[in-house]
Each structure stands twice: as structure tokens, then as C-alpha cells.
Amino acid sequence: MSPQGKNADASAYLLYHSIGMYPGKAEEMAAAFAAFSAGWGAHDNAQWMHALGMRQEFIDRWQTLIGAPAGTLTTSENVTTALNSLIGALPEEHLKGRRLLIAGDCFPSMHFLLSGLAARYGFTLDTVPLRPGESWVRDEDVIARWGPDVGVALLTFVTSTASHRCDLETLVAHGRRMGSIIGVDITQAVGLLPYDVMHPVVDFSISTSLKWLCATPGAGILHVAEPLIEACRPELRGWFSQADIFSWDLDKFAFANDIRRFDNGTPSILACAGSLPALRWHAGQDMAALLAHNRRLAGSIVDTAKELKLKLVSPENEAERGGSVMVALPDTVNPGAFVQELAGNGIYADHRSQILRLSPGCMTTEAGIARLAEALKAAL
Ligand SMILES: Cc1ncc(COP(=O)(O)O)c(C=O)c1O
Image (cartoon, rainbow, N blue to C red; front, side, top):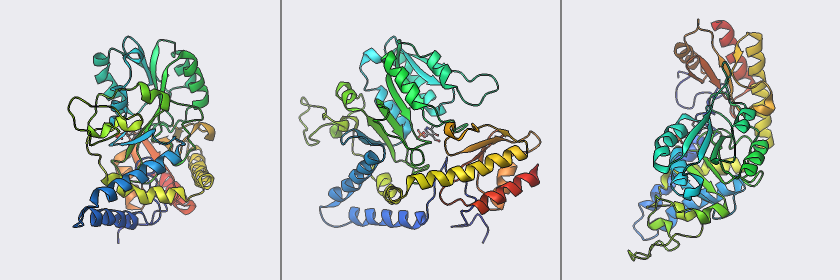
């Protein structure tokens, strides 16, 4: 079978920034979808209890994972919709006539959304730029631009372009002094780096489950801190936003007191069902060991890049880095063709222009990283 065939050797699987893998994922997901289908297709009246139970387990596991108190986390289709829902719920005082601060290395979808919403909600989207020639926005530049007129700041814990890990403690402490609402996009960190919504206390967190957590697409989350929930009036609302979803009197709509006010119509459950095996697997792992394994292999990629004089796009200092190592390929190498050549040899990575993105996870091995090093040497 070709190395790209089903269940190919994962020793050089380096796509955890995109889709995470764990042992037995395909089989466990198939079984979870089969269990969902069996309940949903049963000729009885227990379908909803069965399905909503799966969604609740998804929510409970996520709450435990990021230290979110019960009633402060719900599902969303993706990170963009989670942010949309939050912005559409904030009291006007945080948006109208205020600045919404974001860094130029945020995930582009967040910026696309916010630039489209700015005029409607009356805020100015202020994007802290990268310094010329640099590949991540420096924390000190974010702080320098973060004044008391910033109504909302969206921080990216780990960036998708350089795997830069920001210093949340320092940034959040500054944001508190400025009185801003502080949200964090944890997509590229959660499942690998420790994250706790209480340390430091943030106002909202948004993510998906498909990267280091190894789950499915469509399984996003929105966490909103308790005091903020109370002040929020989500624009996108529906029968599931109520404490009693069966309260159907057209004149008596009432928001639930907890995060359920951010729900709207019938929730999408399939992604939760498909994600449960990965979340259960992850909950049984030694987080420190997962990170140590990543650090060892990422360190070895950094050494190879230095040996080959490849420009490192990610921070060399491990404390400032997420789980990925990005390197710039020289102009003499066609990145698309090189990534395909790697795949032909069972080495799975991707690229953004000349930048090769390499993310070793729990199934990646030292032997796989050695094969990557050989392939890079041969290409250069
Ligand atoms: C930092 C970050 N945020 C968000 C996303 C995904 O956003 P969405 O779920 O809206 O596609 C990604 C995907 O790579 C990401 O790296």
C-alpha cells in the first residue's frame, strides 16, 4: 500500500496544527457515529435524550479541560461563529465608539468577521502590526497600543502562522487595568499547552476541537465568564436560549441565566458525538508527557533547521512557542511540490507560501523526525 493509504504509518505525521491524530481514532470515531445512529434511528422515544446526553458530555469534558465553571461553556460550529455570537451579545458600551484590539497575526477568519461587523456595532478594529521582517506580533507592541478606550481585545494564545505563544498573564493583567473585555482564541494551544479560564481570569474563550485535541470539525466552543454572561443579550437567539426551551408563548421569550442564552435553534449534535472518543482519550493522557514529547521532537526539528541554515519562523525559545515549528524554505524550493514529495515518503506537513508548518504530536516519533531531517537535507 502507498504511504498515503489508509492508516499509513503516523511516525512522520506533522499536521497537528490542522488535524490531530491519536491511536485508534478512525475506529473509535466510526463506533461513536454508529452509536449515535443507533440511538437516532431507534423506533422509540428516547432519541433526544440519547443525543442531548452526548452533547452534554462534550460540554462537561470541555468545561473540565479548561477549568470553566458549569454553565459557562456551550457549543458552536466553529471559532468564527463563536466570536460572532459573542460580539452580537455584548452590551453596547463595550463596542460603540470603542476600539476592538487584535494583532496582525490573528487567525484571518477572526479579522474577516470583525472588519465586517465594525460599522454595524460602531467599533474601530485596531490591528497591531507585525514589525517589518518579523513573523509574530510582539506582546509589548500589543500592550503599547492597548489603552482605556479598548472596549474588547481578542488575543491569540498560539498563532497559526508562527506558533508564537503570547504571555497571557502579562497581557491580561494589562487589559484588566484598561478595563477591557478580554477574549482568547485558544485553538492552536488547547490539548497541548495548559489553559485555564481562571488563571488568568479571562472574559471569553473560543476554540475548535480538531487540532491538538484530535476531534472532529464542527465541534467548536464558546466560553463566557459568569459576570459577563449576565450582561449579554445574544442577537442570535431562539428557543434553546431559554431556561425552558418549551416556553413557546411568543410574548414571553426569556433568556436562560447561564451560557445557554448563547444557544439558538436545535443544536448540532453530530460533531459532539464524533468528538467524544477523542475527548475521552485526551482526558486519560498525562498532559505533561504529551507536551514533553512534543517539545523533544520540536527541539529536534529546530536543530535540523539551524544545521541546514533554514530560517526559523517560530520562536526558538520553547517558552514562547506552541506545538509547531515553522521554517521558511528557500526560494529555490517549490513548497507545493516539496510537500507532495514529503507525502509520497509518508511525511505529512503543509505550507503557507514558502513557510513549511511542522507539528509533531503524540503519534509522531523520533524515527519520523529523522526521516524528515533526511528529506530536508536531500531537498536543500
Ligand atoms: C488560531 C486559530 N483560530 C481559529 C481557527 C479556525 O477558525 P474556524 O473554526 O472559524 O475555522 C484556526 C484554524 O487553523 C486557528 O489556527
